[in-house]
Length: 363
Image (cartoon, rainbow, N blue to C red; front, side, top):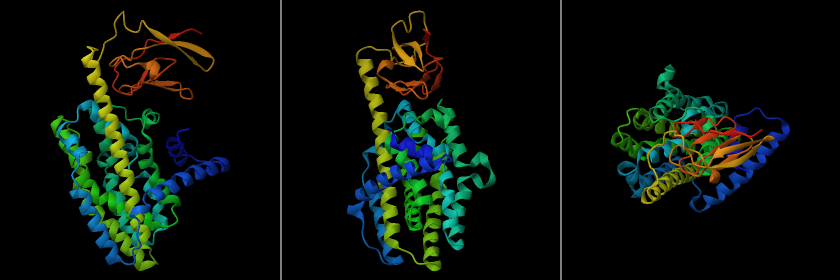
């Protein structure tokens, strides 16, 4: 069972009573584990001054920590690796901030205003061409990737799903709004610093549509102030628990770090496999269809029918018979660079492959 994917789909669906109960069970188990993970960094914070001091110190510590990952992204990451990073955050980028709306009615109106300012910017200040989701879409198009979130649902890391799902919990079901505001303050304060390496990578790889990243660098410094201002407004309007805000900071820090680390690990793994292919003189360039292509096949049974599917992916000959098979959706995903194909038609649904599979229907 893919808990992260299931939670994401539940969160974006209208649920009956049974499905809603199942979603709460899955989420509760995950959130419990998450709080256990941040337990060592949890501490009691009693005042705004104490929170601000701890927050500033924590941000400074993270910014000043040496990062081999950031250096790798800036200076070494290949275009294929970059595509995998984009893949892992594509669902988030294409739906950016959509999960934030439920927090608004939970806030006192004075705290709603600064959070709404953040949302207005996220959605392009009325110009949808400048919405962050649109900027991510343009980035995906430039590097030849799908803009349909369905094409990514079967291949995301669990850590990428955690990055998506945490905001559904923070905005809808977290018992206190402080968790969300602490997490938002952290993300808005850290993002301009953390994504500088992606701006560098875009420039080095000659990617034109890098505004998704540069816009965050420009505008998130204002959003960080708005998130903290929302916290102060909650304190003025109602009682506030700064310990919970601090736990929100720790949750956001942990989940963000895990998602980036897992995405980069997947990207580096694809590069290592490509290196092995080159060492053994396996073609490393996209392969065009030819009379001899796909002569070796394996059998796939799907919904009462049988298909013969080529063993070799048409992109770089990844072994499809070792790939990920989704019986429900009728798809198979290459384990090498994650091209996904419809088994019945052979159609390429997503990923770097440029041609479809030559599938034989035996039914």
